[in-house]
Length: 239
Image 1 (cartoon, rainbow, N blue to C red):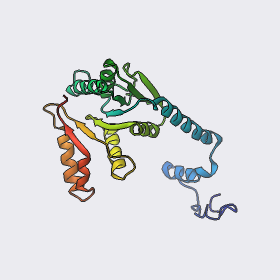
Image 2: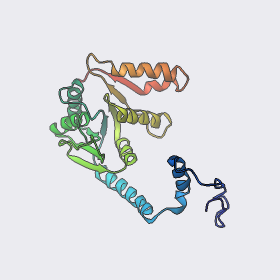
Image 3: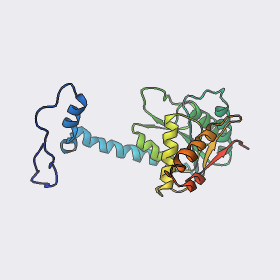
Image 4: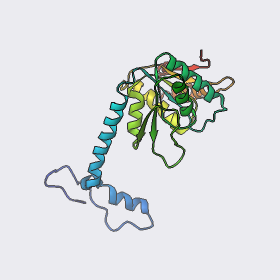
């Protein structure tokens, strides 16, 4: 329906199709031209994807509905067992399990493995919510409740839905994405305000540097309210 107005919907298709053909040397523009009306030609396979999404939500909610109070722990998949952050996370997860909390992680290696290991060895519920990726994400052996997600956004909802607190351990893009999205949900009132602990290792300044960036470049430029910083707390000791 390029450049035409649909009889069924007079508000659709009012854009005019560019005159002439898009040069083959500009594949990005050609793709935009071909795909901009994709929603109007939703294939049968695309329609069924909606049901796969709903099924993944239902499966995850049913699986986790009886885990009780949970703490979600985020962190790098690349942290090895000799790292102080790994050992501190494992210890914290063990203490949480002993206090009756379930521990939720992304189910992979590194910090996720440390948290699942500590909770499982303490006899607690150790949840690993794996994501299917072409690299890095290999399920760890310590989660005693395992889910396998295809869609990142469903996995993120599950991280938040059952948690009463969050622990964030230093990590890369994925960890920062989860941390800022979590804070955004709280800041905008889309999620209850819960404790958010930034776990620091002895002698490290990862979260101090992060806080400096947030204070100087975000709050300092008026991009966030300084009061938003009260949502997080840096913790260096685990009892």
